[in-house]
Amino acid sequence: MKIIDLRSDTITQPTVAMREAMFRAEVGDDVYEEDPTIKALEEKGAALLGKEKSLFCPSGTMSNLVALLTHLQPGNEFIIDYRSHIYQYEVGGCAALVGAIPHTARGDRGHLTARNIEAAIREENIHYPETKLVCLENTHNLAGGTVMPMAQLADVSACAKEHGLKIHLDGARLFNAAAALNLPAKDIAQYVDTVNICLSKGLAAPAGSLLCGTEEFIVKARKKRKMVGGGMRQSGFLAAAGIVALEDMTERLLEDHALAKKLALGLAVIPGVILDPAQVETNIVKIDLAESLDAETLVASLKENYGVLCGTAGKNSIRFVTHYQIDEAGIIATMDAVKELLTAKA
Ligand SMILES: *Cc1c(COP(=O)(O)O)cnc(C)c1O
Image 1 (tube, rainbow, N blue to C red):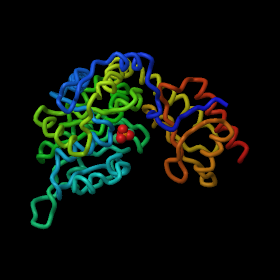
Image 2: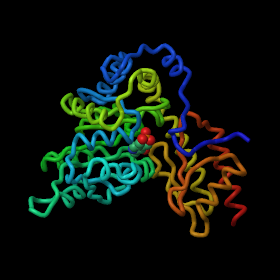
Image 3: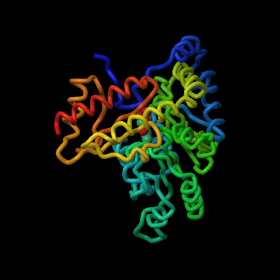
């Protein structure tokens, strides 16, 4: 049985060009700032995001953690959508390791509005923590790969500035947002102070993320990264693949989006599936199931009987993610499998 793995775009395998680049990479000790390939990747990333500097981190989780450690002091508050990755899926690092307090708000399809921020900011009062930072996520993972509208981002940015707040953008899938908007990534990043991008998701590098910001910020962030154990040595081998990811893999993300749309259109007509294909903007397809159907059972049957791997996203929903290792045949097979399973149940 051929396996069709739609659990996540993190499962992507490095390309042949990446493997060759890794084999040939010139490396040095990056804690001494002597790794030329790391330097080349960091320069390329900063330029693509329109920031002065960038810092290679082993994972997106560490990149976000280092950003929070650099932006915030213990006891500070930051405003964030309640479904954000930083709040939901980073093991509470903001509390355990930063000592900061998240002030959650309900964004619009995952994206904070200027109203959300106005409502969450605290005035000066002896009882209150100080609000310092706004965290955004684009595309928004748990909301289903949604893209933040540019006008909303501009509003949020102006609002944060007016109140003296910085903005950190978790752009694990920023290049998916850029592709969907048909804009360079830096046109989005211009509205935020710092941004994390993941090389290891749809861009298919084996590991790594880049934290981008001003030179002053990145100098401080480098020290925080060392503190949490992210100072790596000959990490240029990973950076070599990251350079290929930035050069070869951003343009093709639209192919993932087209397959996600195709899957959404196919699934939406199956009885028992609740989904509006118009809401599928990038490479994530989240479906809700009619009440009588249990997501976990369906996910298990898809795996056992059809070799289709996907994940639950709550008791009644399932998430499919398209990526470099998924082709049209895999999408058709997935639609057929879901249809057969749900028809058998009806
Ligand atoms: C995957 C992801 C991260 C974390 O990246 P890791 O490399 O898995 O630690 C952060 N934010 C979002 C939105 C993600 O999807």
